[in-house]
Image 1 (spheres, rainbow, N blue to C red):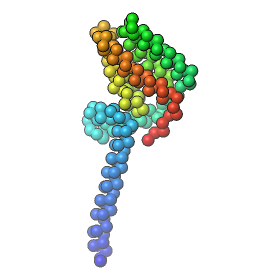
Image 2: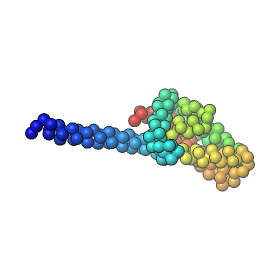
Image 3: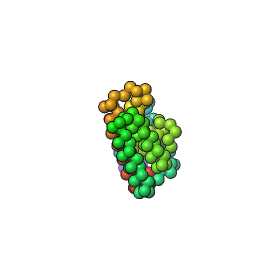
Image 4: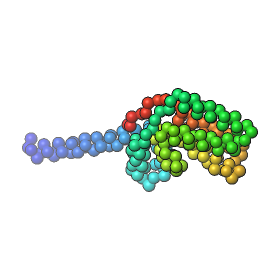
Length: 185
């Protein structure tokens, strides 16, 4: 077999293998992002101009998150937050709007205590999405009701739902406080 013929066979095979390897790598990276971000992956893809842009945004969130000093909570601090949450829940019986506002503040304080920046709600969502993407919809829904309640437009059922939603993120942030930080994927 001549060298030209051999090259004509080997080069396309090498190209096909290289393309397959790149495709497999991209698929694995996409799968890791989906697993890490949960429902937030699809939400980001819907909001992005393209899948590449959306995945770039998620990787930027990971990089920013990894630079944060997210720390575990001491058991005494976790106990204090648990007691504070019980007080907020008790308040709901007589003052549901106030309880929702206090739940929002308590979740914000807990985020800050763990090391998350809390100045901007949209940035909070992005920062939380890296490790808490599965409960982020709860936080969005609760926040929306909190905004409604500041205008006294939320029903008691919406306020009750907001408490349930805040509780989902609160519990996750509180329980993660005792766990070692996950290594970046």
